[in-house]
Image (cartoon, rainbow, N blue to C red; front, side):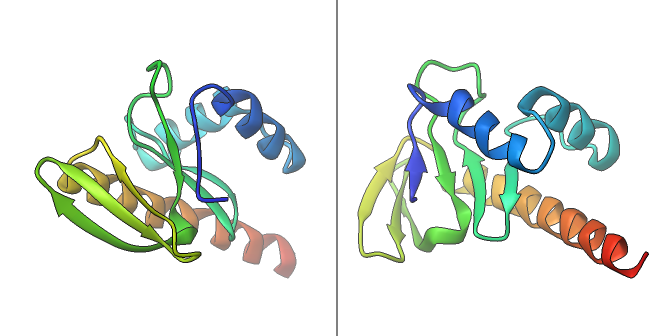
Length: 123
């Protein structure tokens, strides 16, 4: 899965989060409180699905990009071209610096959940 369009967005994401006994809104509260990430919060489903919102989740045209499937990002006149690992190339309406900030937050969230998983295994 390369990305999810807004039409399916929160419903599909919530189903994936529920597998790990979370829901979208509680997940967002946790990330805001514990990691102090306030906007465009990436969604960690598992190590193969980490969804990056290109806008606020409330936006009618929010698209969720799977960070794990990104092969390359290219700045393109205020937009970003993403080449996915499966060869698909798509242009998204997000500036590269904003996408890079969201990716940086995704890395923090991935680390947080992977550390939780390690702690749970060790206990």
